[in-house]
Length: 211
Image (cartoon, rainbow, N blue to C red):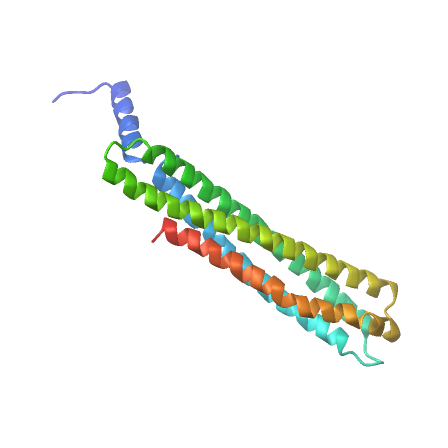
């Protein structure tokens, strides 16, 4: 039996790992990271939609309130729900950014390694798949940016409603801001659609990485 020195054996193992893509920076590791990151976005979106439902319910209660109802309790419920919604929306933006980062890293490694292929057919096939990933990641980035803008605007409107209620919780005071409350309810579908869009685009990136 031929005995291979320990040091030499270690070198051979490392070289094999590099050739088969078993290292931490392998193509499969990047692919797994993208799939994992994109999976978080729909989960965060679902949580945001649930919190948005609760906020809408609180807004409708205030809009339809009658004299003699507990405005202070309604205000407290709305303030609590809006805070939870804001946190949930921030999580969507963050998980969207993480998915974009993972997709970009996968694309960069894919592009660099595909360029080294000497077989033209193999290089062309890989370039097509690489291009699909590039498009999907770019579309997710655009969707996440649009979502952030919509989210920021909605949160600003929420803050103004809370500020107005904090100044005057009397029935006439609540009645006076009904137009602003109504506007939040009218704009709510825009936020919901932005959430759905970023979720769909995240899943599209995952579909390219894991067809």
